[in-house]
Amino acid sequence: MSNPAEKLSDEELVLRMKSGDHRYFSVFVERYEKYIFSKCHSYVKDKDAAADLTQEVLIKVFTQLAKFREEAKLTTWLYSIIYHICIDYLRSKKKSTHEVISEKLADEVFELVDHDEEIPEEKTIEILENLLEQMTPEGKMILLLKYKEKHSIQDIQRSLGLSESAVKMRLKRAKETINKLYGEQLKMK
Image (tube, rainbow, N blue to C red; front, side):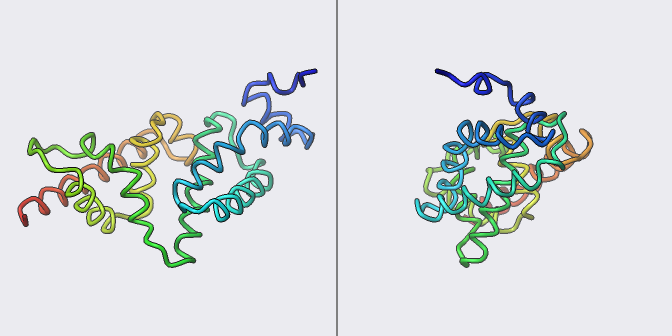
């Protein structure tokens, strides 16, 4: 017999969880645990660590749910939690966060840069790693949310608690930074 709570929209599920009915959290876990694990694993490349981080994300969601604003898209808010927890983990393990982020953005590099020159993928990844090493964590995250995760400006705005113009400005600055640095890298070849 199916559980009627499984048919709730994300918005309805969040409202029920925020009202204090913690039974709905198990529905949330069933719905998002695999997604969270997959995203964590894409950062840390280790199943055991990803499983631990998944639990950490779920705890953070549970404890921070009251701060979630319903006008934001749940998946955007969830992604920002995953991102911060995984980056903190990588920093604590002294792993290269720019390397992980570079891999995640490598497929999207041609959406970010404004150069016509055809460059082999290996060289593109190498250049992008160098570029991202020079960017702020906020710049990297906003680029990931927009270009890798394909979230809308409005979703990013609501999730990060910024105005639409602030999100657009940060995206513009991040793209300008990437393009400027990319152009400098090409000149150095």
